[in-house]
Image (tube, rainbow, N blue to C red):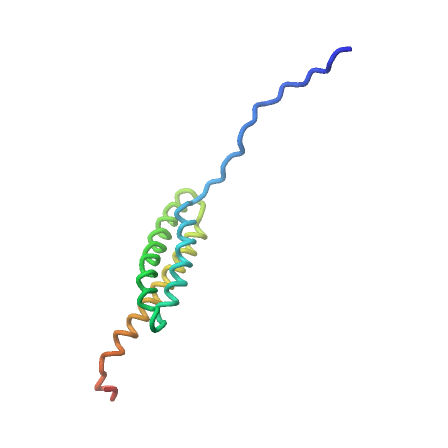
Length: 116
């Protein structure tokens, strides 16, 4: 009897990689971290430390979000994560600015309003 011969197999090719947007993914990671730290800024004692932690994360979220949007326009991938990073970055920046404004204006007397 003869042994059956196997048919030649085609060479294995790896599956094509899906395109991704690394800066948008980084923005969606850094943005919520900035937001959580910005929410701690109004607290009485931990607020100063939280400001110095939150501020670099806010800047990073905004820069990475904008770069992710530019990259998404070119490749068509990653617009939603970039927008999420931008939104959380801008909300965190607004919280920090409002907190600093409230703190700064708490020491200014307003004589026209009858507050001394």
